[in-house]
Image (cartoon, rainbow, N blue to C red; front, top):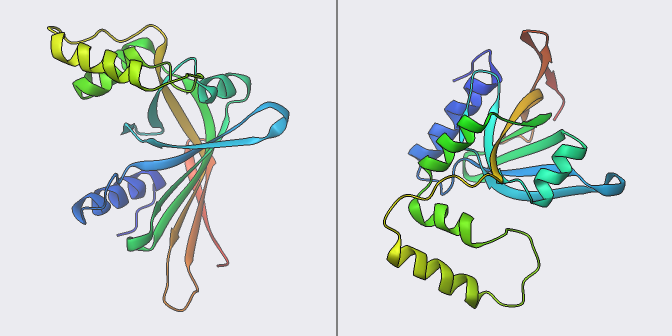
Length: 192
């Protein structure tokens, strides 16, 4: 199935990966630019696709959030090897509205909510055991759903380019490049 809007194609490919029982079909390499122009990558999970943007969540003290604040240019790479597909996105990330962060936090599993309150992701520690003990304690005594922490947010990535790559047996892979052109998308093919 091919469609004219690349985010609709991405949605279709994620759904196909889910139907094929591929683990974590919304898993994506999320690349930011750090100090001195150095790239910084991590794997995250896509939370939602809007009409014109991709949504993610993050603690706002993390390296990812700090790098986006300093330079909002990002790259994303989805890859489903067993389907012979990948999607490369470049775009601009920005902190989304607080209400959206709270909504996405409420959608998280309870253990993930608690982990967010227990661990300052990415900060140096001496030992994991105190964090595990605290998480186990909170899981045992928690009577109400945790409130979204003030330093936790939603990130909205508005794509500028989206390349849809489909593997071909003859190695002449299809590479459709969509470039944001005002309110629409200009599409072209790239040589494999």
